[in-house]
Length: 471
Image 1 (tube, rainbow, N blue to C red):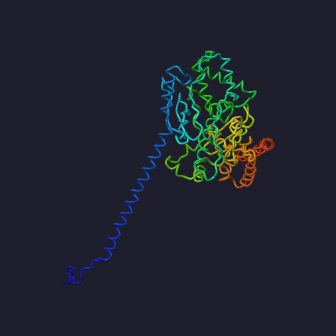
Image 2: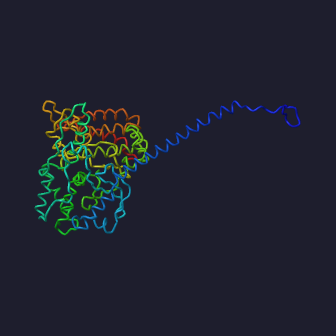
Image 3: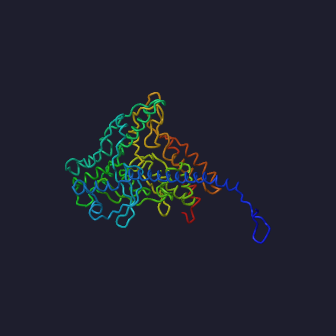
């Protein structure tokens, strides 16, 4: 019997069973894929969160610093200008963790209504496998010197001897470079070189200006102005002098582009607030930064950074900082990690060096390289990019660096200034920056070309932004 519509002769429509069967056949597979992708996303997200927070807990241990420092202060072992505010009055507020390595704790903070950067050292241990293969790790016992009360004259001589480098302990000797087919030996050598660089203290060499710097150290040690240096004060200052960046900050206090020291307690010290523009402050979620390749990070840094005229002003400040490092009051300093992460600036776009950890005195770098065995120039590297040539006949590193500070900074500025540069300036600017990057580290060439090239670059940039709101 045929079914029909009520009140008419039209038949009922036949159901399309074939298409329904096809749809029902597709849905389970689609559901499985969606569920799989959802679970994969949850797993990947959970893994990223776990990695981030596990690395955060390893890198960010400011509470350990504060506990150790305050314990030593209460025992009367150390002292300093911020000890009472830190340990008794609790006026030092720890805010964002900016540490990139567990051995050097860096936090933004607040002290007496000022934005500050808090820095404190925690000694790192080498990997257990590496420790058994390379020279034993040199133990650094903080607050171990002086061992007894000394006169001002004796402590002055002790400090002067340390700054000259005459009392420096020997650095660990690394095994000879391995062949390409020995990855384990290469890894051992890499770990050893990193440990030797870390163990190398920032001594300034025998300079006629050192007595003046020692005078600054003694004035800082006598923070309570009682015209004497107690044993606790002497221990604190001695521990601070072991910190590479602290000694450099002290040496560059008169310079415009270095952060100003505000106070200390033991080997913990406060400087001016973190400058803008460092990669830590970039507007990127922390979870994404490890996943991005360096080229993409640089492109985002350009996009998220200031406008080109402001970048030109920051670059002029960076070039002035290079000038300050070259034959300054306390000798020549080398920038041994030239990256955008160290390019900081103030609210008025004046350049400030964000991190001085990888700036080293010439005497320290030469002493580190002197007599070091090598087969390639890569074996003669201090820090990240302070590299000297290798004498393959003698199999020893030479003293002169391959690239001076200015050449490395110009290579950095090519990626920082050329994108977005005005059309009428781009060609000449690119030519000058390419010329600058070819400078050699040989002392004779640096003396002849360094100041001239630097002056031309500063003049070119300043002419473009002078007489405008950017100047």
